Image 1 (cartoon, rainbow, N blue to C red):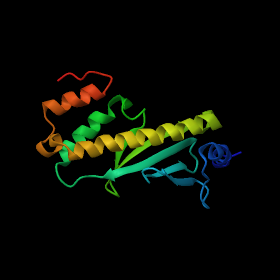
Image 2: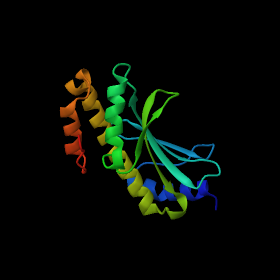
Image 3: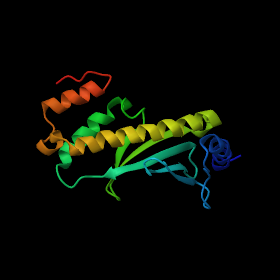
Length: 163
């Protein structure tokens, strides 16, 4: 059984547990779904000749102003994967979007792991979106990220940052 077929079979069982249908599109390698509460768009994908399952979600557009301050905060948030449950937050330069992504080896995947991966990833994406949205609305962003904001990020993180 190829990787796409294997994941599609697992998605059938996960769909029953989640209460909505998850299945690859006609091309066979991409599954799109939305979170009912936020309407955020998620993608599960198996690339041709890859043994990994990718899940990702566009979070927001890169702000036009104070980009350095925003990216500084984003990199701080991304450190060690603590705030993202080991997913990565990155830049899609083509679409000018901040995207959160996670990958997992298909050979190790089972229905329970896939279910937990989807639930945890969507929860983490909502949390990261909220943190980024709050930051963009904060005085720290308006003024530029100073010492006090760095301390705020350190409080959120499980590691203490040295300043």
